[in-house]
Image (cartoon, rainbow, N blue to C red; front, side):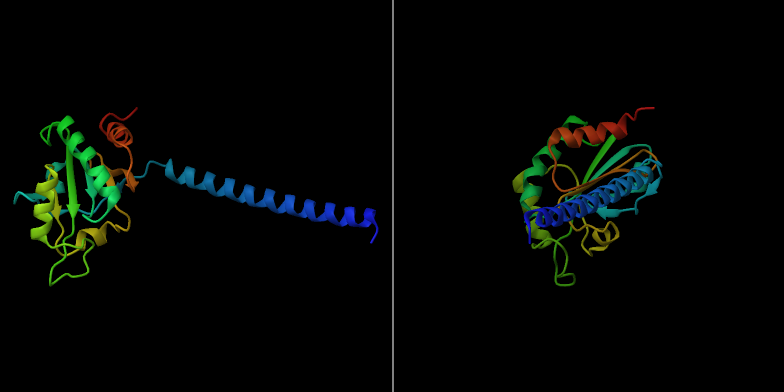
Length: 195
């Protein structure tokens, strides 16, 4: 083949690749635009109610906290990201008045047991209570001993945090660990929404 023919074939291949790339980029842009449009509708998403007992023996019912902002942090003891994030949650718990003001901070853990060996954590309730105490996790950590709450919230990544507004609507869902500043910003966005 002559160099001119080879160059012409090469140009056609490059042109075809450029068209494919443009199509992929347009599709991605359209998908993102549709997602952004759906996200901006400000739909009120209700979260499932939680009625569980914490490490201190106190029963918590999310419905009792209507009128307050709630942050729920789902975690497991074996997760390194959870271990890194938990001290930040403790700091925020202290900074925001230890659940005595406008923000309620709750953890949710799911210990294993003979009856529920497939729960997400790898230790039982007794070991989890010791773990919480030894690490100074003073904010209420609720025990989902059946795994029902983890299933209802579809928890697949640890930690996972939900921030719920004063009316019980989900306003932020954070999958994975983030910095204290990012967590605080998400809380502030719900505590003090821009009008």
